[in-house]
Image (cartoon, rainbow, N blue to C red; front, top):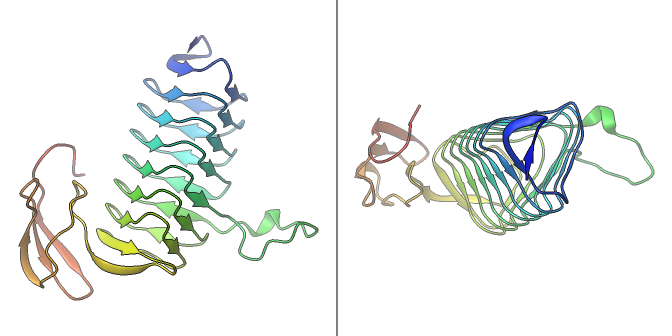
Length: 203
């Protein structure tokens, strides 16, 4: 499964990796994936079965893309992002099969540490803030603030999420994560980080 073109990268024999592309060491590309020429994928990533990565996509370090995720041109994914099974990115707001709109791709930026739940849809042209948590099946049609927990179709914020992924208390004011002990000050529409604790690099 190792590949001489990309030392330290595991590429399953059924995967198609077009050259040139950038693949960081420690990354694994599993069954039936397709990485297009020009794509940039960081170190220690995992691309599950049937993942497709388009040519202008940038994926940071330590990301996990579960089965059946297609990352289209115009999408940029930060470090430590989780993309759940069959979640969907888009890149054109008004697609027609018979109208070429390749010059109209709307960028989508996914911040560090974000979790995108199974079968959610990210409408293009929106930014997902660091450590946000998008629930399974949600349809994101506008920017998502850092640490926001959003669910539903259309997605709406129902709370705040810790860096470790745990839901934070719903009351405003000082808050402490029950899982890792990180501390925050929660507002009605804002969140301030007092300090991160637990595993991982917060910066």
